[in-house]
Image 1 (tube, rainbow, N blue to C red):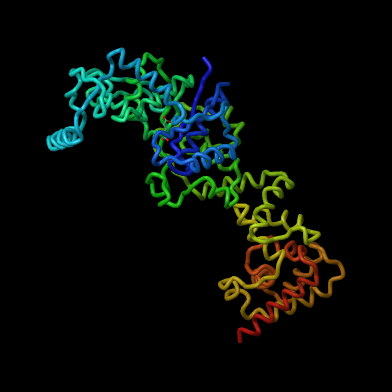
Image 2 (cartoon, rainbow, N blue to C red):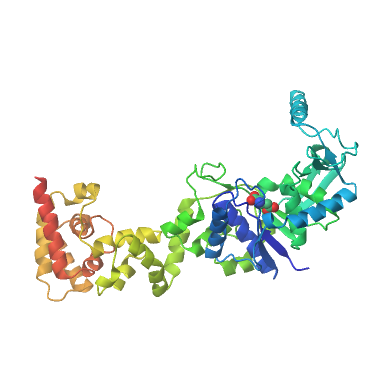
Length: 465
Ligand code: GLU
């Protein structure tokens, strides 16, 4: 049978890391089984669902290449389908109307809680044969004893006691279908075979299976994924600094890095760390997903992004970098050797925004020096700066090799340890102590500019006194 999976987000917030991971695993599972991947917008909660969030979710997924095989559907547009299915349940006698008031239910729950029992509907209306009116809800006649057992691809056999399960509400008093009912009907109507979702839905599964039974639907395959946790081992949230997918794109994490990082949230393959989507389609095994919570580690994401950036051919890297150059105000077309500069600096930081910021001093004058670096290396380095400046000014050929040679001669002549010679020059050129090898760094500027920047550093030092 063709496997059909679905990602079923509720558009009540922007696409977050846990959600994308669920979408990715659904997508990969469908693709590796030559099946179909669907998206369903679960927007029955009209108050909290918005079209903006829906657009944000769909765009985020499409940016990552997680595209559905059919147009996404919206639950808010499928009410006829639900009403039709509800009729069948009512006719089969597997549901009943209940007119218990809120007050009665509150009192009942309070009593149960005071006896240390789990609060649940006591079945008062179960056999009263009430008819629908404005005060009734429709409840499922859930079996009262026995067990509900299902096999989970991640967790193995999962057992729930029916006595623990409520007579679930299927229709609210205004006649609108509840979340569980829509979810079950849609999975059936969309011919879904496999439900891959977060572990927070595990306790919904027995309830939904009872609805399937009442409707005579076939069983589904389930995989409940471990929760994604922050470094503090708490569930991922804005509080532990991990926000929406777009925030990562805005900093210049590549789509492929995000996919790689998401895949590793709860799944691994030996000590292999780098995966592209096609690797996942061949290597991923849903049965290998771990049960324990998966920790999102931003240092790991940096490491992964560094790797993915380094693997890009130069022209592709450049195309990805250009929007970030614009953000930091760099016009790379103004210099003839922009490509050399960018090639030398491309792995200076783990994100494209970081690299673009590091490129700024190569395209515009240094307007300030890193304070700590200046304190440590620039202060008192006047004679070093002057000596090297003279040496460089006397060069007839200006390239990395001749510059390296001049620097070596200067170091021997002054008999200084390398940092004492190199760092003041580096700071003069870029404002900080971070740059490629000094010879290469200097060769990225022309001799006049180098002279000029050393002058500026000397002037800065003179003004310090
Ligand atoms: N709409 C649910 C959510 O956003 C997902 C339900 C499901 O996957 O079955 O958490």
